[in-house]
Amino acid sequence: MIRGLILKNRSYRRFHQEIDIKLETLRELVDLARLSGSARNAQPLKYILSCEPQRNSLIFPHLAWAGYIKGWSGPCEGERPSAYIIILGDTEISRSFGCDHGVAAQSIMLGATEKGLGGCIIASIEKEGLRKALQIPTRYEILLILALGKTKETVVIETVGPSGDIKYWRDNNGVHHVPKRLLDDIIIG
Ligand SMILES: Cc1cc2nc3c(=O)[nH]c(=O)nc-3n(C[C@H](O)[C@H](O)[C@H](O)COP(=O)(O)O)c2cc1C
Image (tube, rainbow, N blue to C red):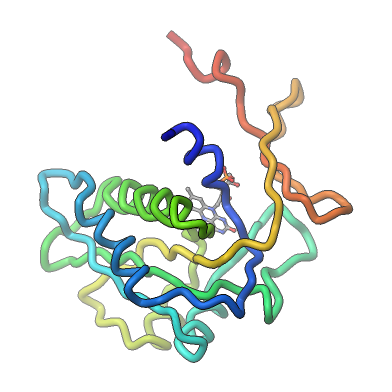
């Protein structure tokens, strides 16, 4: 089961924007993060949820999409995420957040996949612009944004070839290909 879920849990960047995601669904996903591991059990992560077009439109301009796909600056209107979960680090709880946000992000993305949704973890964020747009207090460090929606693209896994090129690409049919290194190439001892 977990292998199947992980295989399905690809990064998707185009969505059926008109299909809403309910606030309760986002709360259920954050609850999975809440129950996940945290270094020193400090639990310093906080979240901002967005599933309304007006708020979503304040978030989208501050995100960078698929750097390897040249000439594509991200999903067009109509194919944008229906919801976002912003992961913040509360500096009044901890001054560093280690891997906590990675663990939380994966829990949320797997939960979203199980619910028939998909999305993309985004670290490339124009943070000060986003902070201003959403009036996020400086107490909170902006760590990651999870873009979510009903996915509208096909993503397939490939094997990294002898050239070692790990760049993902999109073919003429719009299918997104993601090269993964071989198991024997990553287990070194
Ligand atoms: C920590 C992290 C940050 C990422 N940041 C971005 C990002 O800023 N923009 C983006 O389009 N994709 C981002 N991605 C998605 C990666 O590009 C994606 O995971 C990678 O291409 C492999 O594809 P896969 O998720 O389908 O396995 C990020 C993924 C992770 C785990």
